[in-house]
Image (cartoon, rainbow, N blue to C red; front, side):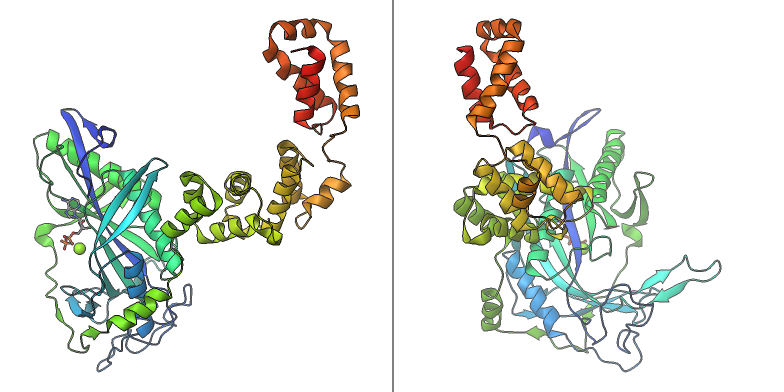
Length: 495
Ligand code: ADP
Ligand code: MG
């Protein structure tokens, strides 16, 4: 829990400072080949109504049968969130009518969820870490989808998603800014992806959030919250919070009060608008689903799943800092995506020899990440291999090429020789650094004799050395060993 508020987190209103309080309900689609209570496929993008069993279509007399893999995924997720695993949980019916909900109720968990309280450690910035409490995680079914844009006169219903397993992960109201909420969702997504329990694909709707926002004067009790439904990108979550907080502040400063209600965020207009108020809120008439027994398992089952969990991002980050001596920031950036972390380790240890871990980190998070970003891919999805990056770093460390030439070699790997070996490229194109002092000396002498005025200036002001270094580099096509150039120049100029 954040008890102390940083002034930088406060929003300035016309009448003073306000604090924003945020709690998120994240819906994460469980990675599983079949649905929560039926054997139908969960494959995304299938023809409408082709992945629908009689259970998903709610044909009379059909009975749900729990999918053990979905249960295991929920337990794994709970373990990854350092949360209480409940050995007994109950499925309830949440009753409401909607055209894409043929059962007339959603099977969910209400009073007894499968996972209880937990914690997520969130890096808000390189220097700020917060803890966000998890209230609960429960399993529930997704609904179908109404399609209103297929015909001018009719709406259609696609039940492919009906019955797909979701985990609803409810946070405590522990976030205090849009940045904190964005960082929390990113971290949650990273954890789920490491665990393999949700693919985290927000464009396909595998991860979406209901965002609860309220504001208060610092030190006052929590204010009334509004819930913004179904926000489906991390950027929109941030925008929705900022927009909603400002709307509430304006109302309160005007002497008004906040009605607890459900709202929708419209990214196009940059505003939230009311969907339904608390008075119209559904009374879902929850009751235990008589078709399903309480879900029970023993501690041995939980322990078995725990022992098979992969290394999670926090542990990997600590290990990268310890084993590779990386700063927390570099380690954090690398472990944010598991494949990037694996790529990095493959490059550091390529060929069974360990190379400078910090130099490799600089390349992976710097030039390689920038290229990956420019083509809309993750680092590990690009054609650049860990072997190529390792070789590039070796060439620099051996002083065969300078860092600047290495960038040129990377550009060649990117555009001309996608499968090229950096060492062969350097050889074939004569990019080897000139360490032969004779050749460098010739260049140094030529520059010195052509610029007597600059020589006099440099002797009076030694920082002029940089100008000479630049000239020598130019003359040698950037291939002169910079250290040798520096030493020779200093000696010849007597500075
Ligand atoms: P409900 O059962 O009505 O959905 P919950 O207590 O489950 O209410 O809270 C739902 C979400 O709202 C949680 O993520 C919680 O952290 C958040 N929340 C609760 N109170 C506030 C508040 N005053 N301001 C912002 N978020 C809040
Ligand atoms: Mg709720």
